[in-house]
Image 1: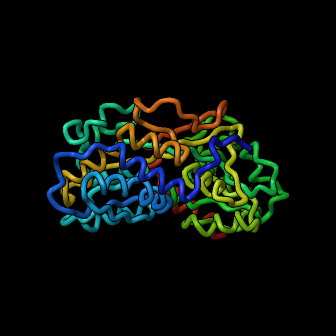
Image 2: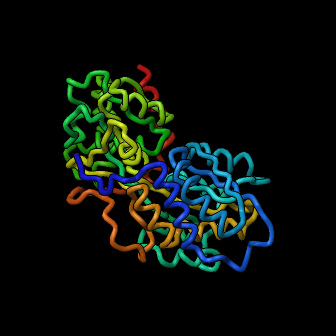
Image 3: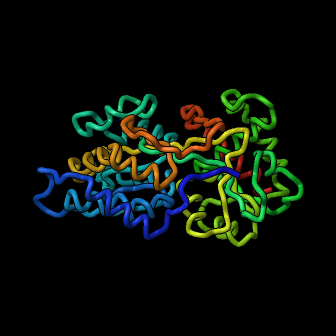
Length: 348
């Protein structure tokens, strides 16, 4: 069990934080002539903090309404593909491996310092493929568990026979599903994660051993968290700080473990859709998301790693636990075949 920082985040404090953020932002001299709408695609689990923190601050500053469509990254990709001739999304927040796919299909336009000056202030490794996308804040991922358990100190606990039919893992169609896959490879081979991530055959063999403990595999997160809170399951693998810890603080009987083998940095990226509507407003949204003021608030509220180097003094990641980021180019190249193999394995 980890110490997860402040415990005063409630729905009310989120709303107050959003209002406070709005006061931090100076009124711009551009883009205020008329009210506009900006359609942003993102993860369903981001809906709460986008609507309660980001949107109010941005709308006050720019006089523009944010319409946030929360879904899976692969669904966002499909939206961009099917609307390539006439995009309706202007900005998309999705995972790095799906970003690579979007770049390969010519769906994105680069984020430059001229469009979004804050991109020059990001830490090394947060800007990808010459600005095609950038990371803003990155939640960390571990194992969510019902607090009837004393804690979860190791990923191997998912395989413990005492938890028969008491575990849920994400589908590989969800990016957080990759964490269980990579950790299975590590546990099977004993190799460091940096090497084990390439041992996919061993990973699937280890996942097959997990099946007796699985109640289900999810593609939609919320229902699984309900099962966890009701103690119908004991552990929910691959879960991230920005979703699990606020629910804990709101009173749910759950916690988020950072097991000794390591935790994962969620690949939270933001991009500009090529030929998307309201391009100046879209660039302004991206710039705010990459700025120190917004990232300070988001990092505190979502227990995430900020990307802007001007953000200081935050304690959002458990101490002494390795944080791993995989080879997303390798993931992107192989993900489709892994999903197919995973679905066959779990259907048996």
